[in-house]
Picture 1 (spheres, one colour):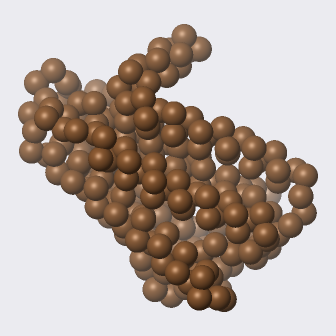
Picture 2: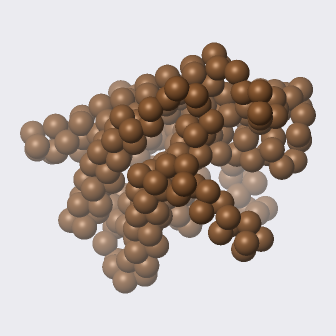
Picture 3: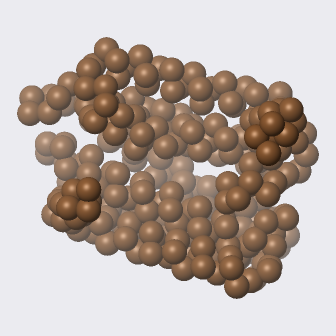
Amino acid sequence: MIEGILNFIRELKIRNESLFYFGLFCLSLSILFIVLTKFTTTQIQGVNAWFKPFKFAVSIGLFAWTMAWYCHYLSNFNPTPFNGTVIILFGFELAYITFQASKGQLSHFNFDTPLYAILYSLMGVAAVMVTLYTAYIGFLFFTQPFPDLPSHYIWAIRLGILIFVVFSFEGALMSSQMSHSVGAINDNSNWWIIGWSKTVGDLRVSHFIGMHALQLLPLLSFYIFKDTKATVIISLLYAVLATTTLVQALNGKPIFTQNEQKESE
């Protein structure tokens, strides 16, 4: 297994050196951030201030590595503009989140000063631009032939990108109501790192599930299902899961009921 991981890392660096190092930088930062949670008691809305930078560093690092891997399959595609877009825009987002965490202040939904309002709005613009660029890459996967790759794998990438894009834009829903919660204002819980609400609806659940279709569906298809029909069915079921958790959150209901929480405890 270790040899397989090392081979993946070597291949990833060959495929896209820029996104490889950016992803490595983000994932390395995530280790620093999780260590900082053990050495600081600063909290933001009831959770350790460094959990949010940790989650974003992991998410951005995985996104960079994932897209570095996928873009290699595209013919007549110049990855350099995409690399720059991801590194600059997501780099800015992570830097601002980290800076605010170091001050014990909100990065998201923060309009306390004109500067904070501008920086938060710029984060939204950055996320939209990267998502739209990713949607364009998804379009290329739907329109280009891939004779040397398994059909089920390509369909997993296509549908993974599609679901990712749809649920990435859910961030606009959270911004529109200035909260990731429905039934309270930015409610959090003590659920280890994820912090999803145990008492009200939490839009971050479907956001998380939908965005990580980008990695999960191709992995399942390539290593487990190895069949186009099965891949499409599982992808549709996955989309239903993400949609169901979104509807549940919009109805103000947590991902688990109180009874389920007590039983799990």
